[in-house]
Length: 69
Image (cartoon, rainbow, N blue to C red; front, side, top):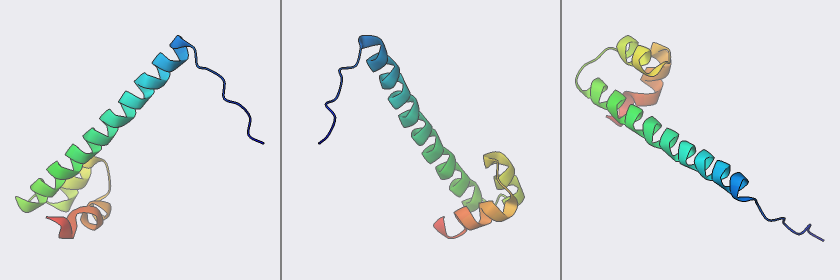
């Protein structure tokens, strides 16, 4: 039988709400980063430049963004 859930305090709920908002912001930032990297690839930036901008190797940048432009 499942354990009954306990109620969260206002402080716990506030912390969890901030954590949720931070996660959503991180996802939006990652999406924007990927969009900008694809745009840079379309505009002719090198894989080395794109990789450096997004914090991955040139090979990883190529694999991540090559056919998605």
